[in-house]
Image (cartoon, rainbow, N blue to C red; front, side):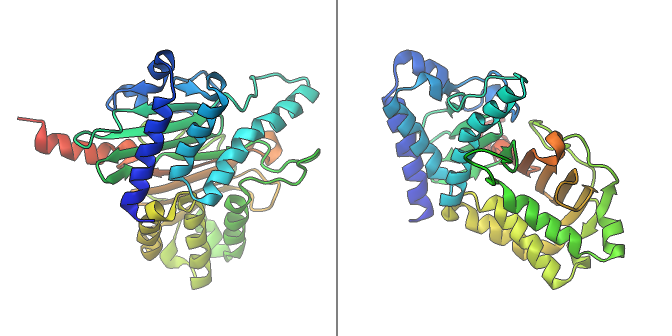
Length: 324
């Protein structure tokens, strides 16, 4: 399928969902594209705006998941659905431990559509968000302006017991990074390690704009080719959650410019150690941590420092066409 066909499919799926909704549901799911709500995002379990799966009929839920599927690869769609269903596993764990922190409910995932999908003159977009999942798409005519921030999380990172024992939704994000860190020689490790102890969470949190110091850690130019290949695999692991028509150019851009990326590490480098890593080069940023719940709780995000929520593209457009 062509890039333009993917956008057409995305637009059609958004319209199919909208056309299935009542007036009250449409009030919940729709916002103007430039509304501040579009850049207000969280990966924690909180009350959100938008239309939750809980308030949809079975057929509407199917249409909502079809929309989500239009942006993701088969692998990414599987992971997103596993993260949603993971709430059942987490809810059972917390109930058995007599720790009730939040209602763990797979229907508390919210869909939001920004702007008018039928309009080619102005941009539009859509979002899927709930605990440990946050997906954002910004579209203008026949172009996808942005697909970041992109957040995937898992608690437990590895299910320890029960029917789903052994399930690790985000396993490669950990295993590839540990493999890379363990491959470093002492001098490389010293350069990569920027925190003796892993920080409490990803440092950019759920900020509307990612803000970090200049690149830190071990630059890829100081890695062997084998190590660079592992680094490329980590990049592909994150961006490859999206359909190849959308993601292939982005993957190529950063794997071809892998020497610009720095690896920054915090904490230990063995399974079970609390650990954090960051891949940062120019506008490209990945953050990951596995610290909470005995280092069995993953947060991971891919961001574009300049163009999350398409703000850079939109700023250029406003300067060119709307300021007199």
